[in-house]
Length: 605
Image 1: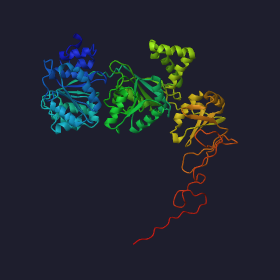
Image 2: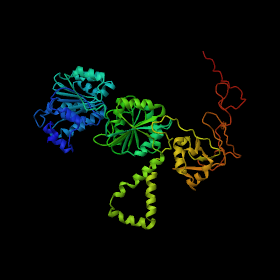
Image 3: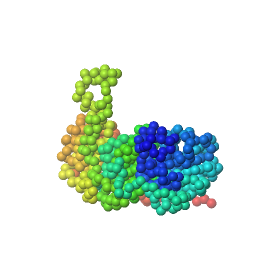
Image 4: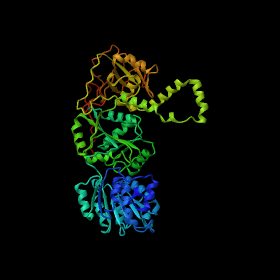
């Protein structure tokens, strides 16, 4: 097989069976004849096939001329990875590559039962894959003996140093024979990496398949210009526009991860989160949900996402800008793998433009500057996808024919097509109405003009039901076929919410909503005769805010959520008496109340 020149014969058949036709540049570089069994410091693009690369590089040193391994005793090869997820992926990749050699594998990773790992090591293993902390633990307890080790691989060495594993790595390498071969794979060669290589490698050959002048061609970099305050709306619209099989949203902090998780859940996205506060079991569950299709959006911090490999990851969104070149390339490298195309979209607010351009420059990346997808663009894209829906291309099944004929006879083709369109659209989250910003511009959003006249409506949902203005706004716009600029203030109460509309579109809005007055699941609205009296949030406050729009008969909230206008006014206990803080007044005392005096405790001996 000339296309696999230099590959150990025992592995060539595995490559062919896996569908490999040619090797990637990094795979060719590590098995080149002039490299031999020398140590190597390798930098390559994420997703370039480096796991298979070091698997091929190890074969000659641990197999020699043999086609199969002798019975397993002490490990011959050790692969160290920064995270449990990456270690397990490396093990799975090497298992198919070495399937025909009779190789025995053992994994030693945090979060797993260490007793089971010790038993596996006692039975013998040719290749061990693990994380630094757990490997060191097994060495210290005498369960892992590296005395026969012929080769060691440090995968994602830069990340292991960033995560504080330097001391563990040094302990592990000091426990292995000096005659071993050491391969280091790192996205970048920083000073700490160079120092580690100088200490633990002998005359290492430097191999780089990363071109500083040419960006990853399988990744479409996009800088998305958004107005201040529109970041979350832009992320939602990007997710809706691309409708990716799997998407990864990067955040700078755990707090942002938790916030976006709650926000996207409320919007109907199938979402999971990865952050440092999660247990190993929770991380495993989240990743498995992405792999089996129960979720398709993962929100993560940089540290929590290190080493993860999600299948069919088509979209990476940088909710917070990466701080340097390495972070940009590492985040983006999660997509565009194994020949598949991917999109890396950076959310850039006006004041962040220069920072974004610096990071792009350091990474030698030339992005396409675009505006955030608008609601109209998303709806158009939805229609295009609907026209090419996979179900429309499937042949008719004989067992469905009777039902199809009955539906056509009863409803007709046009009604059935309309139902198909509605079912498809209703299953998707409504797009956000984002402020249009020219690509690459730094302009602030255009302020909304005050309404000359306004109309108020009341909706049967409030704080007690978990209502949020950001969730109500798109719901109102979609139900009434109006735009964001037609909606004014949204005032939440405990059991209902007041929404201000431009009077010019009020009649159109009510007609579009329909006679049932429903704007969402269980949420009913009613038009008010004037401005409502409502209680702004705050302890003991009863005064309604001043408004330029007066009404002869203000609406008083009453009854059950969604009750008819004019219901009996509700009042909290003592609600007509302002609360006076401090020991000078009783908690429910009204104006002019006598000072409140505590009873003196009786003296005791």
